[in-house]
Structure formats: structure tokens, C-alpha cells
Image (cartoon, rainbow over all chains, first blue to last red):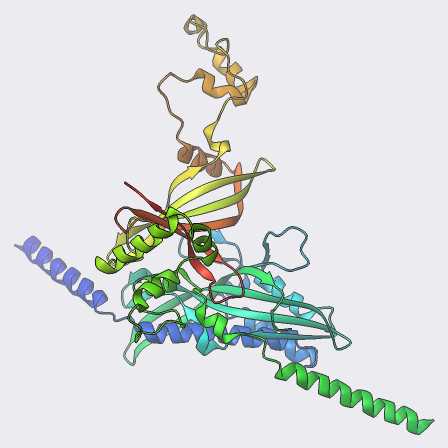
Length: 210
Length: 258
């Protein structure tokens, strides 16, 4: 009799938990919007980090704050299993590369390089975050009242390097940022937590309008 | 003299500010090209399914569906086929999609990613292809899985083929000591020792090489997606990167399949 009670209780609990997790509504529009904002924060930061008219200490502090936007804070990280993942990478190409293959560097190295560019002035313009294109957020995992998702945010970026007010280098890149989202159902609703991942660079051309 | 220097400094300062303000005013990113470009594969799905239109298409136009689907093609490919049967295939393909109201979805099992990979095998550069498909994990959760590997290094083609390369008919009597020889003397003739009917499975070879740390993928040098959702047609898309309104993920190949 006790065994029967136990089994019945367990079945009810299982059904309750599974229905509870199925009830988590994923606010897809909100998720996409948050992803754009986060990537917008990243693009905004990199143009400021590269801007030599700003104080070095300000740029350095911004660089550190940018690291935090990424998964594992741009360092090695674990994701539930016993595999140490490499830090977030940025696959980038430049017009000056001799072989047209993407060069892959860690994001932390990319940000440090931005601080130390040899140009006298640098201008980086990126697609406004409201215009960024986001792929459909796709579910990776569900546990309890938490849903994990991933998607990709696309934006374009133009880079201009000046030396004595002359443009000495310019490129145009199309970037895709992997974005990881954790939606946690709280009493106040759903609160997406967004972390950025690897950044893929498509190709580099001279901008057509300079 | 002092005035001259002062004037030069002021002039330089003004020029610097002027030139910088000109730089700031200059619009660098082209919004029209950006909006027209099919930036993500998901966007290709939306345009194919007419959830979104190419910005130059208008729903008020009676042929907007045809034109929108035609705008999914790489115009270079269309131009190449203009005077051949290929062009009529494109038109028939578009008609078929509209007539049968065909939609394509991410979760479909009949579309495949073909990734040309550049790798390092025992320190040497190698090229090979990986075929990937979307697989359902549970409920609304999916993942990409490797369905096939293809490349010269996976065929294990022997560098030498000879009837003489074999295990001797009486090797069983010496405890198959010859097995040591086949793995120490010349490795790349191993398939001479297989039975007649054995077929090498390239995908398993790929998994084995990676498993034992002998093969690293450095980057994907080319990526295409092949779609088979439209009955009797197979088409592929590729990211065409150019500064025109016909760019991004576009159809670069279409064939009729019996």
C-alpha cells in the first residue's frame, strides 16, 4: 500500500514538474532585443577603446568591462561537463593578410590590440543595434524554471585608420556574434541573461564610399 | 615671426578639427545594401517563405512572389543560365514553389550543410568536406550532427597495391607474428590486408583520426547549404559577399532531379 502511495506521489510530482517546465514562456522578442543591446554595447565599446582621443585609463577600464560581456569573461570556461573550453575567439581577416584565410585570435587579445593600434586616429562605425539582424533563438536546454538558448547577431563594421589625417587603412567587415541566453522565470517574470560568444568575420573589402 | 607661428598653429588646429568633423559626418555604412543583403540563413528562410520581402519588392505588384523568389538567386548564376535550359528550370522551380505553397523550415531533415574544412593532419595541410544535418534532441531542441565526411585522407587509399602485400597463408602457424610487420614496416598499405568486400567508411576514419588527436580542423574555408524540400529540385545557397543589393545567402546552384 505504501509503495503504491509512493509511486502515485512520484508520478504526480513528475507530471507537475514537467508541466511546470513546459509552461515557461520564452519571450522571444525580448530575448532578441536583449541580444541586440548586448552586441550594441560591445560595438560601442570597441569604437571607444580604439579611439586614441580618449584617456588611456578610460579605454583600459572599458576594455576590462568589455571582457565581462563574454562567456567565461574571455577566459577558459567550463559548461557543465568536464571539458575546459578555450576562451572566446574572434575570427578576423584583414586586407593586409597575405593569405586570405581567417586569422583566429582570442577576444582578450583582440581588445588589447585595439588599445595599441599604430594609427594616429581610428574610427570604427558599426550597424546601429536597432538594425542588427538576429537569428531565431534556439533552445539548448531546459532545467527547472530555466531555459538556455543560443542565437547569432549579425552586424557590419567599417574601420578606418588615419595617419596624419590621411586614411591609410580601411576595411569593411561583416560580423556574426554567437549569443548565449539564459531565461530564468522569476516572480517578476522572465529575466534573460545574455553572454556573448565567438565572433565570426565574413570578409574584408574596401568600403565603396570612401 | 611669433605671429606667423601662432597663425600656423591656429590654422593647423582649425584644419584638424574641420577634417575630423568631415570624417565624423561621412556616412560609412550603406543602409540600402544592408537591408537588401540576406545576412543570415534564417533570413533566407524568411524570404523563401515570403515572410519577408527583398526591399525592392512590393506586395502591390502582381508578380511580387515570383520576383521575390528570383531575387534569392545569385544574379551571376542567373546570367550564366540565361541562354540555356537552366533559366527555364529556375522559372519552373519558382512556379512550383508558388503553386504548391512550399515552405522550408530549420527543423526539416532534408537540408544539409556542406562545410569545406581546412585542417592539419600530422602537421600537413589537408582539405576535406563534412556534411551536417539538423537532428531533433527532444521537444523543441535541435542540434547539428556530422552525417558524412569526405576527403582523400579518409579513403586510406594504399600508396602501393600488390598481390604480394598480404598475410601469408601459413601465418597462423607462427602465431600471426606477421601482424606486427604490417603495422611497423609500411603503414599506408594497410588496406591490402582487408577482405574483398570490405568498404572503407570515410566518416568513421574521420572520427578515428580526431579521436586519436591526429587531425585538427583549422577553419571552414567554404560553406554551402543544400536543400531538397522542393520535389524534383535540389538547390544550394552560399554567402555571396559583394557590395550590391544582390548579396548574402543566395541560390548559386539549382538542378532538376528525376
